[in-house]
Structure formats: C-alpha cells, structure tokens
Image (cartoon, rainbow, N blue to C red; front, side):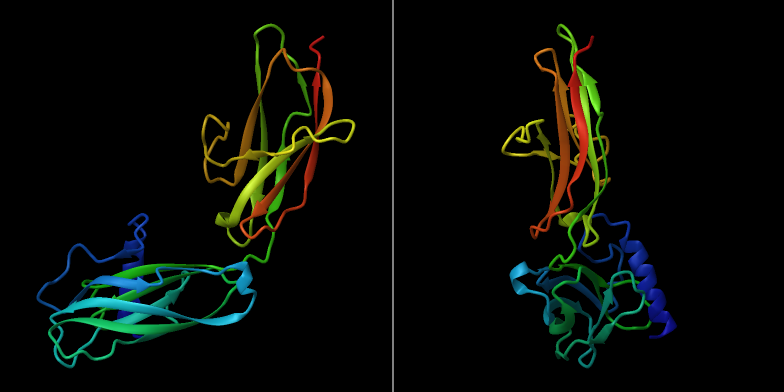
Length: 270
C-alpha cells in the first residue's frame, strides 16, 4: 500500500472517531467536480452468530452498493476493508467496471472468519488511491461471535452487618459486583443476587438483578463502568437475621460465572 493511501486511511479514520454512533458516513465537504461516492449500503450491516451455529470457520459475504459520480468510462472506485484498529487493509480491490458517468457500483466481498470471533470491520470506499482525503464513503460492520468464555465476577461488595433503624428511619444498603466478560462487555446479559437463609432456604425464588445504568433507582453511581448495583431499603419492619448474599452473572449465550458469597446480617440497634 502506498504511503499516500496510508495517509488517506489514517486521516479518514481519525476524522471518523469524532462522529459518534455513525456506522456509515460521507464527508461533509467534498469536491463535486472530481469523482466521488455517496449512499453506501452494506448488507449485512451487522453480523451475529448464534450458539446453534457452533464453533467453526466460515466465509461471510458483504454485499456493497455505492453511488458513483463523475467517473470516467474506464474508472471505478476502490474498496478497502480494515480489521479492528489496523491501519492497513486486509482486503483491497476495485469495483467491477460500469460504463456510465453517473452510476451505481456493486460488488460482494468474501470474509474468512470464525463463528467465535468478535470483530469490527471498517469499509472505506474511495475514488482512487492517490491520497485524496475527500469524496470517500465509509461503513462500520460489527461481528458478534458465539461466546466461549463465561463472565467473571472480579469483586463484590456489601456490608456484612446492618443495624435495623428505629422509628421512621431508613437505611439504604448497596450491593455491588464488578463483572467482566472477555468476549465483550456487551455480551453480559444479567448480573444476579439472591440470599440464603440460615436454614438453607432462599429468600426468594426469583433473584434480584443488579444494574449498570447509573440510575437513582438502582443506586448505581456510573453507567457502563462494569460495576453493577442494586439498593435495598432497611426499616424498622425488618427483623434480625443472618443471611448469605451470593452473586453470579450470565452472558447472552447462557454461560454462567462462578458464584461469589458474602455474609449479610441484620441486627438490632441495641
């Protein structure tokens, strides 16, 4: 790949980082007198494998359509496909020739991958490889693989003992769990909490859910920081007891973390 095109790609990707949540874009300022591309459509726009697909090598096909303008009869745009944050494309080629000055270019790109891989592909369409940073179109395609690793609870936190308040007083008690999933944090489905009574029975059949939403209702301090939280309010109607709090997490494919346990005792305020 030429240095000029390397510069084009690098500048383009840096510029794109300032466009939040845009998976496809065209530069706002472009030279309408030169060849340019617009209206990029990629199918599929996202890739997701199901656990029923199993774990296997496979080949995907990205179907690409883009409108081209001011192209000469023997001129076509280029496509370049990047994996993750790599600066050099792993696939690069021309669109098939279409002899019309205003036309639609179409092609299909094969991608070799595995159903277990989580990837981000950046597709860049340019009129040429001459280093011109204008007149391009771009799309980002995200691939969600079949998870192979369960989530992991790194740390849990709750008070081991809380005094039951008197009168109309209340005490807010936070339960938190820091959770990671090396297949991707977005793969975490639920972080759960339940309590085991002294006699071995569960406090409730349906466990409580901890949230990472930064809301007042859950008591979570910051959203999307991998710390999941729930809050319970203790008042004078509660009775003394000794329980064990236990936490676990489940990912979207049903894989479960180990269970972490901590004591949680309610005592009289005497």
